[in-house]
Length: 523
Image (cartoon, rainbow, N blue to C red; front, side, top):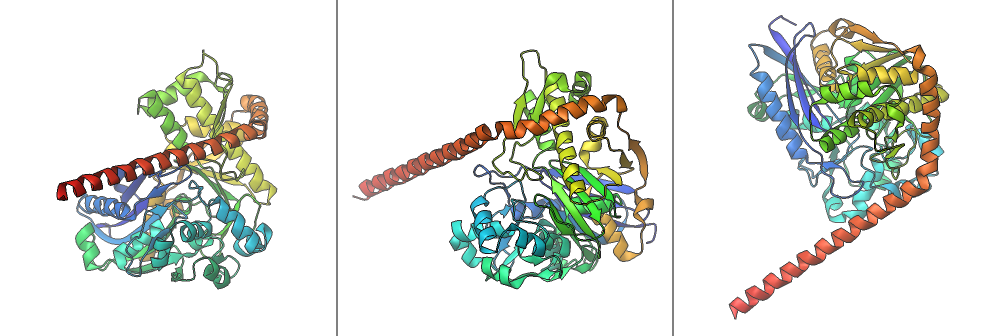
C-alpha cells in the first residue's frame, strides 16, 4: 500500500463498539469507541439491538474517515459471537440479537436437541462441540418455541460481523469460523452446513453462503458510503468472531499458541494440529484456512471488575488496581467464584452463581477487587488444565485486550497459572485483527511486523505454593456451594416471573381502566 493510504477495522463488542484507522506498516493512526450496555430483559437473557449496533458502527466510521488526510482502501469487520440476529428476507431485524454464551435462556432446548440428535458425543463428533449456552442452534429453537410469530417471519440470520458486512455491501454470508459455532447447524469435518440438522431446527431460514474471514465479500455500496463516509467501491473483508480476530491481531494462530483475551469476558483459543474435542470445551474451525482450534470462555471477567467499580462509585480503574496490588496475593483470605452470569467452560453450568468466601468486616475494596482478578486467574488455570487434558499443546501464551493495561491482572494470571505471557506492542484487540485482514486483502502483510511482541509477563516462583493451595480451595468451592447456588438461581427465576406477572396484571388493569373511562366519555 502507498504511504498515504490506510485501512479500517471495526468491531462490535459486548460493552462497546471500537474502530481503528491503521497505516500500511501497522501503526494505529486513530481510534474511536462507542460504549453501550447490553439489554437483560429477563434472568439469563442478554440481547442487543442490531440497528443500534449499525448506527454505532456508522458513527465510528464517520469519525475515522475524518481523522487525517488518508485514503482508505479497505475495511474489515468483527464482532462478538456466536449470536443470533434474525431478519426477514430483506435483512430487516425482527427482534434484538440474542448474544453468545452469556445468554443462558435455551437450557431446555439444549437438553431436548441433545436427546433428539443422538446425544452429546454424536453432536460433538460431527460439529466439534456439544450443545451449550454458546451454541446458536438451541437459541433458534428457543425463538421457534417462545416467539413463533417472529420465527415464522425469519428468513435470514446474522452474526455481528456478517451484519456489518451486510450493511456495508449487501452481501449475505457468514465465515466458516462463526458457522462452526452455530452448533449443530455446521459440520466441522466437512466445513459445510449440515442440512439434516439445520432443517430440523430452522427449515425456513436461508443459510448464508460460507467464506473465510480474510476473504473479500463485496464492496462498500453508495448508500453505505453516504452513511459512513467510507469511499464507495472499496473492498470489505468478511471478518469473524471478535476473539478469533484478536488472536489474529497478535499472531496467535500457530500450533501450540494460546491466546488469552482480557475483556468483559475471558476467552482462550488454542491452535491445534488436528480436530480436537472435549465435553466442556469448543472444537472449532480456525480463522485461517486449514487451522483448527480448541477454545474456552468464561462468562464474566472484566464484567465483574466493572460491577465492583459501579458498586464502589468510581470509574478510576488505575486507583482500584493500586488498591488491589496493595492487598497482596491471596486478597486477604478472600476467595471468589467468578460465575456471576453462570459459567461457560469448563464448568458448563448456566445456573452457577458468583460466590465470595471468607468475608470479614476488615476486608477492603482493594481486597474485593484483588479477589475478582484472582478469581479470573483461577478460571484461566481451570480452562488451561481442561485444554491440556484434551490434548491441546500450550507452548506459547499471548495476552490481548483492555485488561492487559496496567500489568497487574496479567501478572496475577501468570502467578496463578505458572505460564509466561507474551505482550504485544498493540493490544487494541479485535478491531486491529479486522484491520489486518483488510490490509492483507490489499497486499501481503506480516503480523509479526505489524504487531511485535514487546514484553513478557513471567510468573513469580515465590508465589507458586500459595496460589497452588488457593487454587485447590477454588476447585472445591464450586461443588461445595452448588446445591445452594442452584436453589438461588431457581429462586431468582421464580421471583422474576412473579414480578413480570404482576407488571402484566397491572398493565392490563390500566388498559381496562382506560377503556372504561373512554366508554363513559363516549356515553
